Length: 102
Image (cartoon, rainbow, N blue to C red):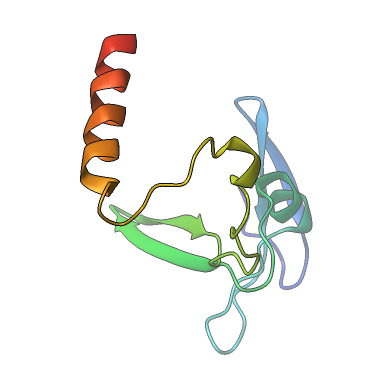
């Protein structure tokens, strides 16, 4: 197969998926195709782990830490308040109950 021309995008079907080719920019940057970003849900702020495997690179995308607070998320599920002194007993009781359910 001939090498793609600079700036030209080719789509090649391969095992039911597709491969998109782009040119590497002057700073070594590579574009992740919009179709791939959308399918994987990748957005600004995501981290990329690069791994050299033989003669190619694998990219694994990690989402950024969430910015939404989880405070109060379980408020409706709390059945009782436990004092600091009673906490060890309550924790032990909960562990025993979880083993009984299994």
